Figure 1 (cartoon, rainbow, N blue to C red):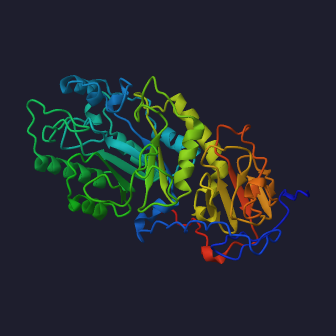
Figure 2 (cartoon, rainbow, N blue to C red):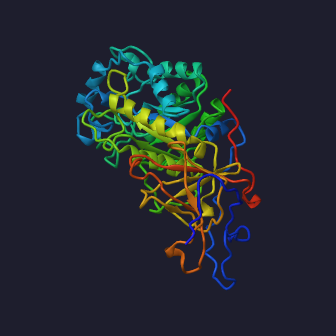
Figure 3 (tube, rainbow, N blue to C red):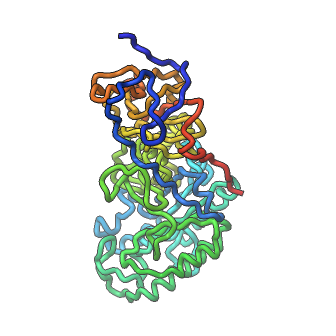
Length: 467
């Protein structure tokens, strides 16, 4: 048999039976049944049409969980999970002194990884605030450190035009008015407290106003843990009035602007080609904790790279979390992880950053496809089963194929294979993938065509920038 393999020489149009007449390198018999139609094109997230649209042009960001819990280095929910009495836990504030905190070092590490915004925990469930507040003394200025952490990070972000988003926990294990009832992520009722949701919401609204007025322009507000599921649309309305560029997640007091799947959890249990609403996934590099843990178990590089690719390739944002140490530095393990992430991401980012989802062009659910202009990108988001990938029903060779991870030409073929004997089809196949040599990463191939089907619509390119 004559094998017709391809090493970046042939040019042709990619097509599918559901979009255009099937173009095969060799004609199949007229009576041959057609391949099953590919899924419908994924829906793209609608833009806001205002200052919040920065979010669509900066898809990859850093999450930083930091607070008193870093001192003992066990878990960010230390007080709750280890049943530490409040009177004992609050003593950690007397030891809060992160003298090596340098926000520019954090941003350097984020930018090196390819990240374009940052989200900081201003107040986690323990109630300790990393900002100076007139409404509580339980904050970083009232400690041996004596400084406003949010102020320092905000100033650095403004100097570098690096969007800053602020996390704020609704559940509060310190404030006497928060109605702790022993529900999930709550303490049992505490002696001496005056549980009152209305009074607590007065405190919360006052702090929201401080965060939205004292730190210049912010670009997002990330709520967490509305245990009571209380609805109050006026709170997000205040944020939008004070900070019109701020995107707001869906864990607060109304549906917000976007959904927040966590640690790759999906309700449907399977990979969907698109999302019903705007989405920003979040994942931590540590398997046990989001905050600093001195005996942490870390995810494999490939696990995180696959997670990033699965969301960015489907028109979603992604926050990758690190937990700073009690002295304010990022742990060596996190810095190494971010460097390796950057080394991978910067090589493949053209497939993820500003490219349009096109996974409907193939029935292969082990890969994701994106498009930029007349280039298709093949993202091996699942663990490869072998060194070849079939892209049925795509049936044309690109004029050039490149493995972005290495920059090397990638062999392609339209030769018939035994497994496709049913319809005698000849479908595009990527071959000789270095799956063993590149075992701890996510492979991404770039396929350049002379023209792609116009039915796809124009490719979406990244454009707007923060001003």
